[in-house]
Length: 318
Image (tube, rainbow, N blue to C red):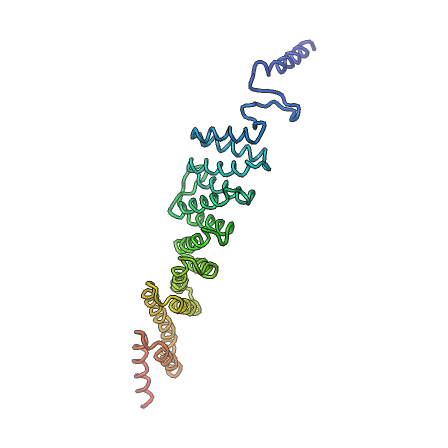
């Protein structure tokens, strides 16, 4: 029992001595715990901001990010909270931690929509998205792994959501379209380009986007599972582009696409006609051959259809 009392007393005396022997730790009645002033938030937002800024200026960006976010955490309503959120993003960017930087800026935009840094944070997000568009690798457990076009899409979409008619909205929509093209999803690419045309008709990118709508519809029609409605839609989009931009430098390319799609349509009808031909249902085959000649006279397929019609005509005379 005496040994037990001695042990408890010794432990108690040790705890009493802790603040003296470990000067960095103090007892706080408010929390009922020991804290280290070195790691604690400063007494005012201004003091905390100045403290964090010292690390930023010294290029100790890891520490500056921690301290700026500490201010946001403990003083979320302070005027300097938005500024600290911005500098946290800048700190992560300086460390080339681009995903963390983007999320820091995004939180700043969502939490402090009236911040004087709003335009700058939007611009930084757009620039970071551009890095992933250009091939920046996504990190997994802190290790760069592989480029991700999907990460770029996610970021560009946030830029558009944050400011649908802002400075970077049309550019972001165009890049979203390009990203989907890289991924081979031409339908989603077409929708992104169309949104740009519809919502930003005055944009310098509207003409190119209008052309891309037709191009993506054309590319979608090349897939093995396509149906003729996709080709019809592509033809409509290209014809619409020609009407909207008759003097465009892209008109020649649009004409080539238009001709290619008409050939595709003719070939589709010719395939059906050939099915009837092989079954010796010449009347049905003849209707399709005639349709090709009447509607697609400028195609190579029309020439083949005419040859078939000549043969059918000779058989009919017998």
